[in-house]
Image (cartoon, one colour):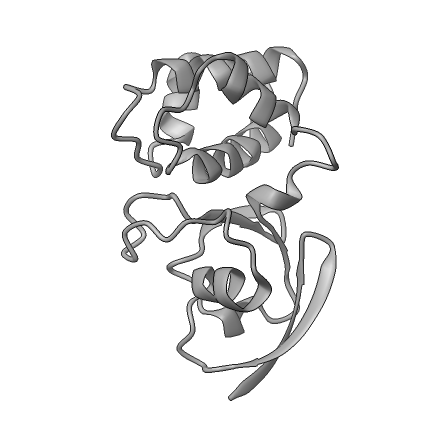
Length: 155
């Protein structure tokens, strides 16, 4: 067992974990952040995307021990008691259907807007290309990210 200290959504956790435990499983099973879904376990779908030290990562491709000393933001940590502007934009633009990909899409969109606060539709599509959605066809997702960008959301 390895001891790790991770700050998740502003709360510090100190835990003993198996060295092979994936970050997604640590977040869900140890910390209780079930808003981060387990998708493909191969880093292809992006549903499990979280921010680690401000950068989006697919938590199924990161070991929990690699997050030792890191600050992790999950979809639950995006808002402070109310919907985050990106969450609101996804809701208002109907940018979800089944919702399985939505947490990862929103986290990836957050990272995209941090890097590029005024992306074109093509840049939005390219910025989200590592996150798969099987329901929406992406049009409403692109509109939601554009709406958030137009509102000045940069994280």
